[in-house]
Image (cartoon, rainbow, N blue to C red; front, side):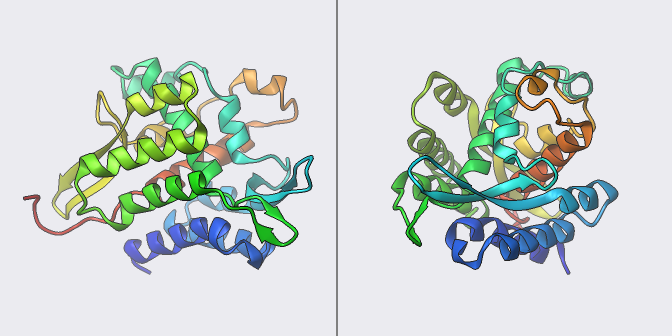
Length: 258
């Protein structure tokens, strides 16, 4: 399987959580895990993360159910764990790799990742029917377009992503700060060019930034809300989140821009 095919498979499995929720959590979870293994090239860390990754079903006080990516052993959503990392200082190993990275950029990466993971879950389901949520649909479409339509003007892709993020997440001070920091970058190498989500000031890809945090210590502030969380759980969250952000980028487009 080529990397391009693997990316498409993983991306399709991620968006199926919202588009094909009727398939059920077991089937959807198996597809996501298989897609992660193929896209992550079956490294030890990816294999461990795929083993821990499931699709869970949660129900709110009004009887509405929804599906989302979660940890198998702990039964907690990945988006919730990333949310609990909000405000954590930049890990030392990340500082060493990116010494000019600001705390605001690190916060942007975590908060954007949280909203991406949330948007990739299913809509609310009531009486076997999806409850319409135009805001979720708008943000998901904008995320999909980054990888599926890289020829679109960078400014348009970025504007659609930040606009969709604010509609989906609402215009809280934190989300407004994310929208101010979030951008779409175009990178070129010997294989052509590609686009992906980045932080604006440095142009650093979110996927690359989260990847540099792999293996960083479990933030202690998380244990206040999730006291049984262990290092392996945090490793899984970072591994999967990095893979998700990478899958949302485009494949290399041969040739040069313009």
